[in-house]
Image 1 (tube, rainbow, N blue to C red):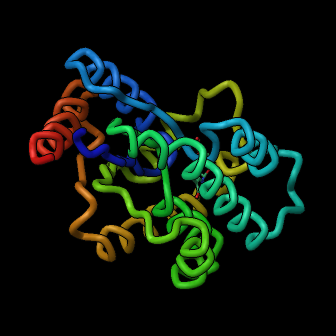
Image 2: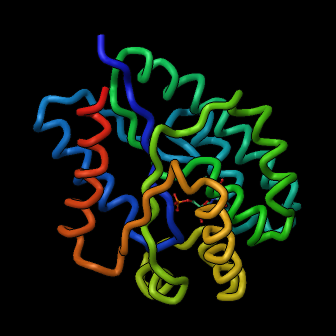
Amino acid sequence: MKKGLFITFEGPDGSGKTTVATIVCQKLSEKGYEVVHTREPGGIDIAEQIRKVILDPKNTAMDAKTEALLYAASRRQHLVEKVYPAVEKGKVVICERFLDSSIAYQGFGRGLGAEDVIKINEFAIDNTYPDKTIYLDVDEETGLARIKDRAEKDRLDEESLAFHQRVVEGYKAVLKMFKQRIAIIDATRSIDEVVEESLKIIQDLLNDR
Ligand code: TMP
């Protein structure tokens, strides 16, 4: 049996991860690959419950470290229940967000620092890193303009422009930290172009298996 793949999409809010990942998954399925499209925080029942707690706009009292630990907890459960079994069966797992989001949002956005965020996540991920990460590159203003009209805004969507600027700065640091693993795609272009480039990256990995 061919080895499975664990691919993640990263990027600021409004970078188009869900739209692009959905089309990419459809196209890979049409080509006959077994694909699992999932997301963090969430993707399975326990992690979706944790997601509700983290993102509930009413939870204004949540401490930054509590937030980081909840993301790590949801990550652990999602890996064990969904990612590991699928990869073991040779499937292609396409996941919106993973550890890099915690480094950017909690490490930089909340100011906890990359080092501590990586440290608590090491316990959760047991050295599991994606085979490839596709970073959808947009600046914070473009991203926020895209989500402006969303009917329901979560606790993080409602953070200030300065918070989202720090997140984008955080992602820039992440891109430097993990140069080999992360491919950067200019996500200000059309969806078709972004999908095509993403598919090419994934197809190359599939061909190399
Ligand atoms: P989503 O809107 O992309 O589904 O993600 C929900 C929010 O959670 C989004 O604003 C990014 C944030 N987030 C973190 O702050 N840290 C994390 O580790 C993850 C996975 C998401």
